[in-house]
Length: 316
Image 1: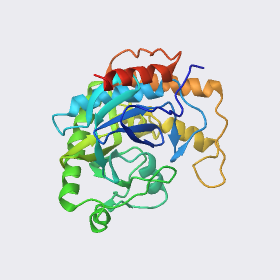
Image 2: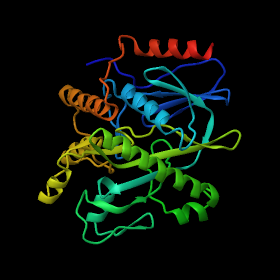
Image 3: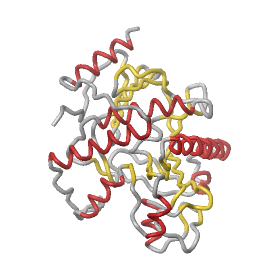
């Protein structure tokens, strides 16, 4: 198995702190820049799995940087540069404490809630008579709270977000507007590649000047679900599972092996074969989304490479 990035312990010039999320590690440089490192960790059901996936961080970072560039006319984003295959450097921002999840289809979490008999999700109605993976009449926005490390994100309605003062009414309405426009653009990009963007999440923050910007990653296999467009209708008509490119295949494997992140459940053994299979699926998704061949970076000494590239950028 290739060398992978798990935890990093860098100490960059003017570093004020580091935030370690489930997959990314964000270094604060003097409250001016953020150095975001996409590790090879993988999470599902809000649990970080015990083994890393080769090249996963590079794939997420490179898809995200391409998609941020492709949407910067809709809303400005935090990105300044990509000095390393696994690293994005951007403007220091204060993140909003919500994730803006938008769903075009009844899939994943929404489908599980629907199957349990619920017809409202985050205050949004879900029509009667739908089958899993059916298209919603119009996309629905189903936000979740942004959990601190180790806690579960939770569904929340627009009304609760505003009434609890998590986001002001004016700001929230702007986040909704951007979310719908970004999803429309992401769907168009996916369609050009023969894919359907099923659902995704966006995160936003405010710069020190008070401007709302798009942050983190967008339209990656960790933040989004994709179906292959070819044969979608036929599979739905026959009641078959959709052929998809997303992290959902990892979740399904975990569910089949008795794990959904609940207390007392054990993560199933991740064999070398399973890890390499997941890595290949991520590479497949990269190539399908971008239309480009994935070029594996040199991982012979991955931490040293990252540190050198980041220092070169910061010293400019």
